Every structure is written in C-alpha cells, then in structure tokens.
Image 1 (tube, rainbow, N blue to C red):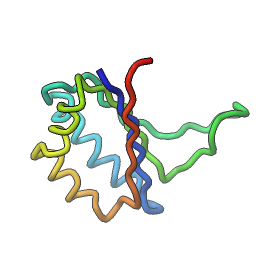
Image 2 (image 1 turned 90 degrees about the vertical axis):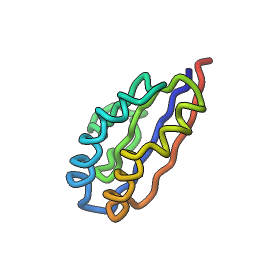
Image 3 (image 1 turned 180 degrees about the horizontal axis):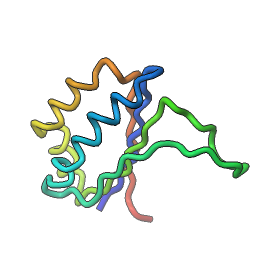
Length: 102
C-alpha cells in the first residue's frame, strides 16, 4: 500500500469552483481498481502553534492506493483526463508526495 498527499494550489478566488468539480469526481476515483481512499480536504484555522499557516487557496487530497501501478493507472482514467481539462484554468500548481508505511 502507498499513500499520496496531493497539494493543489489554486488561483485566488477559485476554491469553490474547483471543489465543485473535484467533489463530483470522488465517486469515479474511489471506484477505480486499487483505490483504497480518496479524501479531499481544506485547511482549518487553529491556534495550535506548530500548525502551518491557513491557506484559502489550497486543497489537499489524501489518498491511499494498492500500489504504484494503481496510482499510475489513475492518472490516465477517462474521468481524470476530463477533470484536468475542467480545472486547468483554476489551478496554479499541483504537487504530490508518495509515501509508504514506515
């Protein structure tokens, strides 16, 4: 099993439009072979000293996949190709971290 932390940096003022598309894509993603979890999240403000700064223009997707092959297949699924086309003008930058259990 692997875990993925996908950080999506959005253009200012685009979060609501982006979330509408992203949340509509959750069911097809979780139905993919090898998808164990796919959870879009947004920052919450806290007074915890070690908490990173709140950012209204960031969406973090916490994912778990059976293996790297399943993750690679995910990128080429038809619903993911359609998703990327729909959100391309809303996104500033996307980065991922791929992790394994320690």
